[in-house]
Length: 127
Image (cartoon, rainbow, N blue to C red; front, side, top):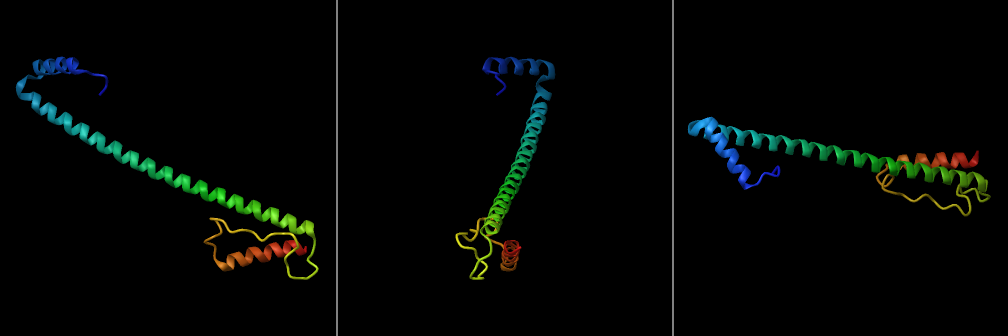
């Protein structure tokens, strides 16, 4: 603790005993102990708050990265569909273009939202 060994602690206690006297020394030690306990409690609370903030920032970063991967995949898919031209069978799916794979960002998406994205991609391919 602070690089203070046993001999240094003894010297500090002897000086405190001489300066404060035997009556006041226990009161001062008690107040010092309460102050240190409060300091530890506050630093523990601050550490918990920092950990919660870090976890929240990491979750937002993972969500942002997943969203960017999804957008990139949709862009590549749309470009591939546009380059392949219209499907002669009229099924809306071009030959040789794989369907997008769901990832953690789209796994929980509502079916209506997925259908909207699919229709938008088909519309881009037809244009």
